[in-house]
Length: 398
Image (cartoon, rainbow, N blue to C red; front, side):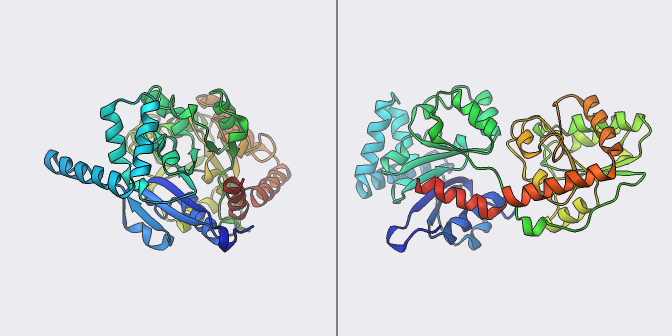
């Protein structure tokens, strides 16, 4: 389904920065929309070297972190630009903010900071994360564009804890929402948002790249693996505790953790204190090809997260034929179907995770192969990029 040349739809996608090569969701979405005849304009707070191959216009916000004098001058120029180059949009934004009870000082600040949007014409202004729309709730209407927001997990569940009432104004607006799972949709409904305005579009992966005929055979030493940013919400410390119990049961294993992050040092120390550091390898960040190679050599994939929107890595592991065990955090129980394509364990219960790993090890080869086949078939049919891109076409056209 493509749009005709006479009716090209322009999507303004709002992100913090140009998506890097590892941010496959946004890059594939942009390229998919372009292939279907949409025009994409990327609005970012700062730029890096990764924008060259996206083939879309990139609009960068003005940097107001240059000192008091320069900021005053930049603000003055931005205000002049707003009210002289696109006065109607600027006045509309100011008026809408005033109706919402935003103070005079904050209102002018928002007009200045958001002027880089107002110079563009788009049909949709789509904020890639919830917090990117805060203090920009009226920008789309001022641009005479439709507004959409993607919630990806942490922005729906963690951001309101860090910034109480941050979405109070946003949730009053008549806008369209994209979420990653049915559970996230149910949570949005609790904010009295119309169900018709919420669309579930799950993540997707390059199934052709990750499809493989190779499957590591279970041996005396079980190969366990996780691919994740080393962040507390990934629950890796609980996984390490579960593996310490596994060691105490006399089961030989090796656990590979692929990824980097602020928790690396603490997790290494945790593995040391738990007495399993010799059985754990922290590889750091690896290329996509290296990740695939590591996954193909593993038996069991673990994603024991505390909070998780959906998780592409679990999809990749399933299509490669790994036995997958995940927590019941948000979208993971929709990613893996318990007892059908893998196993779901209550989060923060490391002993339960240990028991489930032992159960998986002892499952018959026939049942393992049956679950592999079901998981692979499901990922190939339901979580491929082509299907996801078609859903976004419908999202914007309807």
